[in-house]
Image (cartoon, rainbow, N blue to C red; front, side, top):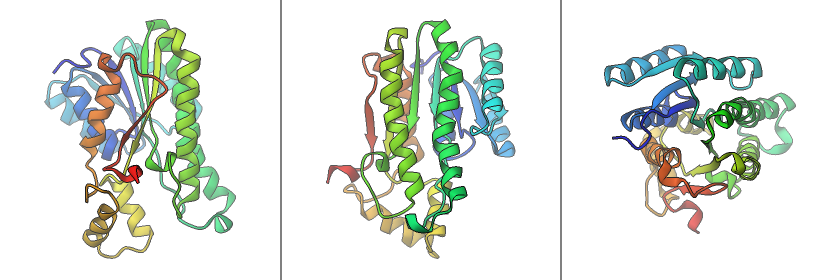
Length: 257
């Protein structure tokens, strides 16, 4: 119950899916939650659920592709809670599912703005607070497609590869400040983003599509948001104090092939 006691955890894309699971599990382990998202109703519902469990939590409307919004919210969260100890860079979109030669510049740029610049902006404006605290942990949510390729969603795959190497670079830069930076690489996790991706890929029977996607994992099924959230708890906690620049792969065996 106290694995991250009194640590302030900023979670982007916190309102739904993996981000929401991270908020709930970190709060159960004693964290204070700063939830960033653009889904205000869902963000408010999350904070209400956390408060009902006795957790300290507050929601900020933040478009992570907007640096001014990120800086303002990060500074407000640090002032409100007294510190920023953990950053979970979870916000992301899947984007256009087209072959590379059919993708427009705007479609490409939108994915990079959220999935890459968002990680950059949030890390940039959390790190000064962590440096003042003398330590910190940043967790970048990448993907199996930050490790291997796939014949779909090229902007998403490019972005997740970038996020993986951003974690390694920042891990080396900020190790002297005792700021650890790691990436997590989920397989297919049953979230609204994956559901929307399957619909946009032409799936009309979601149950059948879920089974089909699950079958490409050696364990035979898709994952749940909690499967990733517990990995985040580990990287946020002092249990992982000798771990930085690493990749935590939680993928049902997908990349073992």
